[in-house]
Amino acid sequence: MAMDVLEGSCKHYGVLYPMQTFSKAKTVDFGRIPCFVEASDEETKRTVRELAEILSDHVYEMSSEERQWLHVAAVFACNFANCCFGMADDILRRHGLDFGVMLPLVEETVSKLRTLKPSEAQTGPARRKDMNVINKHLDMLKDQKEKDVYRMMTEEIMKRS
Image (cartoon, rainbow, N blue to C red; front, side, top):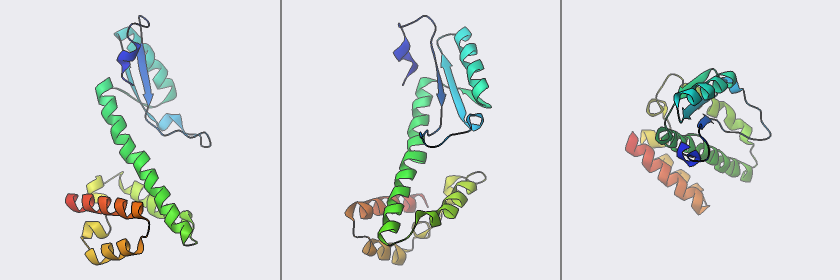
């Protein structure tokens, strides 16, 4: 939400936006979560920042427009990635396999991003433009939605490689 939705409702207002995914079943370490603050005036900004600094070691000022772009990027990085994990889980379950076997791969992928740009960390058949493997995978997939996502992601990776 843009901060201006609060305009007119009170004299002093602001936003404290923790950029994190929250699930009821999983606690998070708030100290590691980046928090973004914005306020209607300097006094309120100091107050919101002080609150944010109690919660997190990573506090930044950010405008509503920048925060909207941050959120779009977060949807790609988190929500869409998790949807892909769900699709992988579906494929594995149909073939009697457990998603747990993917965790070391997923963890290494995320770990690489601490030192490499996403474009440098990209691997796989689309990065190599290995059409033999890509076509084999497409033949194996019977679910049309899975095929469509595979094709779309493959095309995007190939464009970026």
